[in-house]
Length: 107
Image 1 (cartoon, rainbow, N blue to C red):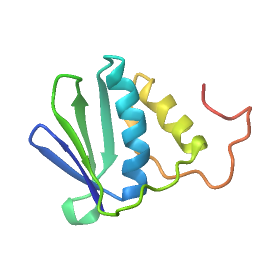
Image 2 (image 1 turned 90 degrees about the vertical axis):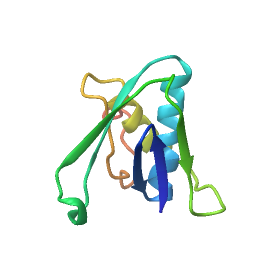
Image 3 (image 1 turned 180 degrees about the vertical axis):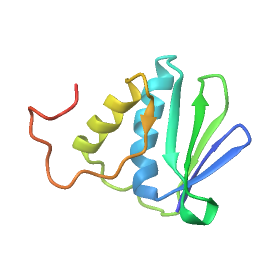
């Protein structure tokens, strides 16, 4: 289980999820594009949904529990990046099973 640390917020994510989020978030922030990140809370913290506003000027760290970086799924990255570029912001979603058909792939 890895952690995303932003300002005074710490959020736990599976290392594989965090690796994909890191690619998308860093891509957006590198271009100077702030974004909203939203995720579902686990049952232990009351279910529901949480969001944070990520801005390039606020320190952000990604801490991974595992020593080896996971392989990245380009289809999942495409889904997450499309979400990050939408008006609703980046929503943490499950990894798609199997490849996304080109007609369904978000642009």
